[in-house]
Length: 466
Image 1: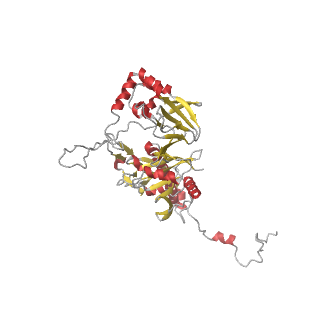
Image 2: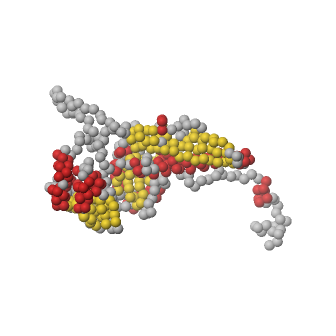
Image 3: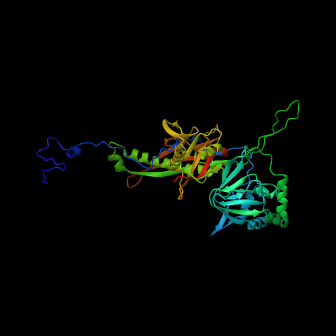
């Protein structure tokens, strides 16, 4: 092809107008702002009601609650051999507060390891309750009998949970429910015979359990709070009970966390390259977007105040089979049944739920959230949050929560009115120009989150999303 021939086959001699390549040299292109793939919808930051934490601390006052332990047992393993940590046996209700380390160590040695395959029955309803079972690994379904003789699903137990603990105080009882392995399980079992032999040798253990049998609990309500004495349904002039509302003496305090960075812009760039877009503003915009993304990540995953780590253990439930099904979402909403406001899940978890709905021929409705359509279950919007982690095995979590101080829900914490505030709760402070003519800005935001009462947040764990 000759030099006079253009790439599209038109020669310079035959062209009747100026070519686009040459014209662009004299034209100002239409350009977009700098794009950033990390930016997400950040629904969590949008829906959380934000509370001013004056002084950087937010104290959650509650009624006095008697909660002696977290309710889960911890194990150690050597190869395939699993052992319970002796001190963790104090998680069993009858042993809470028991401090005889020798007796606990002796009891831990009496547990026998057993393996069960998926579908095998571990204990059968109606049989004598002759063992305490600790679930070291796997999932176990709790099955009861309905009012008309049919089997009903009563829940799923997983790692660290236990059943049969009443054998320690009531050796003549029978199993009220059937427990069946839904996945391969490793359990540790303490037989009634082995326990009785230990109790005969340990006077401290025998005396402690006998005391618990005689005085099993303080006067508590269904939520473990100190009871408020009331009278109702009476006639005449009976003596009314006196009472008071007791508070926790050491309520939890949430301190504001911080995310910061130093933005640097060379003065030459700020002076000469601000048309048609201000370079400093664009640098700052993208920096703030990254900071907000980190803020949402911390609100989900921080081990101190993150929602995934602050849910009460009694508010954590497990899927019945693996993938999130409509039944699982119903169970999740039941944990926060008092006015649930929103469900959060990883986008892949939402897709897995949609697959289960498609398989069952169920079509969830949509609701309006901030002017956009969002999938919903039972009228509660299900919003995506890619900050919820997915394990290497393809397992994730879904959480539902109630919102706001009025409803005793989950609230976000922040501090506004900062010096050089750029956005609510975020400041951009000029730090000066160094000897290399680089301008520095300190970008800071303060935040945290608080769960006002335990049943404000529920988590569906071990959700299979692949």
